[in-house]
Amino acid sequence: MNAQPHPRLELRGLTKQYAANTVLDGISLSVQPGEVHALIGENGAGKSTLLKILSGVVKPTSGSILVDGKEVGGQTVGGQSMAAARAAGIAMIHQELQQVPELTVAQNMFLGHPRVRGGVVLDRASMEREAAAVLSLLDPSIDVSTPIKRFRVAARQLVEIARALLFRATVIAMDEPTSSLMPSEFERLAEVIADLQARGVAIIYVSHKLDEVRRVCSLGTVLRDGRFVGTVDVREKTEPQLVSMMVGRDLAVQAHRSSVRDEVVLSAEHLSWTGRVEDVSFQLRRGEVLGVAGLVGAGRTELMHLLAGLQKPTGGTIAVGGKIVAIRSVRQAIRLGIGLVPEERKREGIVPLRSILSNTAITALPRYSRLGWTRSGAMRARIVALFKDLQLRPLEPDKPIRLFSGGNQQKAILARWLLADSRILLLDEPTRGIDVGAKQEIYRVIRDLAASGRSVIVVSSELLEILTVSDRVLVMRGGAIAADLARDGLSEDIIMQHAARETA
Image (cartoon, rainbow, N blue to C red; front, side, top):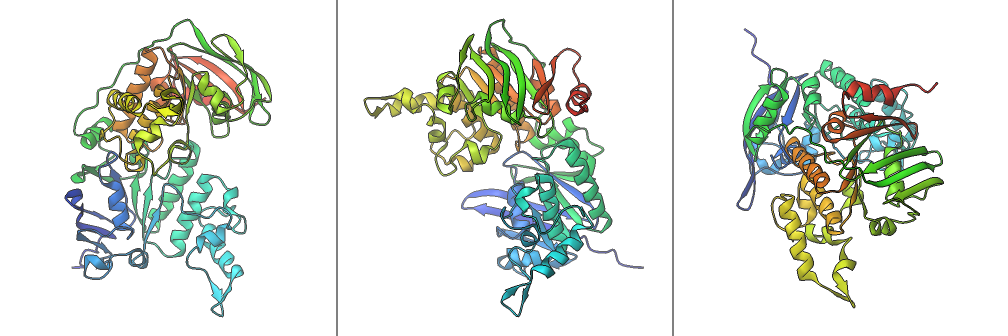
């Protein structure tokens, strides 16, 4: 009788401790060749730590990793390293792609391991030839001699996958691979994953989007607070069942409630930004949550930038409280009571090395300053009160914001605008990269903001999110408003019909 082959990847009792804090507690799982295995859990569940150990960035306190039955990094935990992981055939596709924008596709694929002639001269022709050969398996339309910054995120992800194949990876970990992709781009990624499966590659797939997990994965391991909860067939479990395993409780589905009043607080008439936003007109009422949907490039973020003063319009008008205003800067928008929570939270929304309290205080310092003195005690007390209202966890105001989860960082940015007494909030992709439990908290905050009389515009690529929070939905296409839809009878299909309809 033939012996059973080893799993392609096996984790045995992985534990990671920082002083007295155990962030990963004896995690074991195995992945067979050609299997797509989901890693599921809330932020803080231990997923990121496990991926860092797998890729050799972090050394485990105890436990071992085996690829095809051979231990990675030798016989001791201390031997584990990025070089050892790479040599064992382990590759990592990061959520934030590890690429140099100015370099070509080929140069990025050989980053850190260039081909050279005579030991000193870069062999560009050889690199481009090898890179093109691998990319032809995924997307032959990608020109390997073109700077990678010219490609969309979806193509750049394929380059990272091709790089893994170039160095003969047999285990690929994908961390939130669709956080910046549209549904059509996910379909292409799903095809690539199926092709990798056929080649016998084992894939660890991390995503907060459970519909995607159930689409591309067979098995999934659920983590909670650094501990193993269970390995299940994700297709046999409903999303609520998976969520319950993740958070340790059932999340109640909140019925939509409207707080819309008659008063118009913001309006735009024929608002334009040449080539980006075309002849946009709409009204926003007090207490209203207005959803903005559309495909990538439809002009949603650009519209938010016009309203927030990040860009000057080339035509049309904006009125706040019935009065036409010229919003020429972010400072003017703030004075008018408009606050923006940007799409790129880490790059545009926070100062990573500063505390979560000082990040929140950025826009309100003038309100708490007089004659050159800042009433820091009063400001701190107000910020802590806001953190309590928003259920910030942990409630540690002086902790660097980079050490908080994405959901808590988002709460801090919302607190920033509440501290500034903003009455109109523009939320651009407010739950991107946030786990399902934190999403529900952000939705609660949005409902509470509307109930308090504030008005909210929510831009989201997740149609279910738009349907969950919105009183009304604007659908954008080609920089213009394609439809203004009431909530009654609204569905994802109807939104997509307007978003994707070809222009006559």
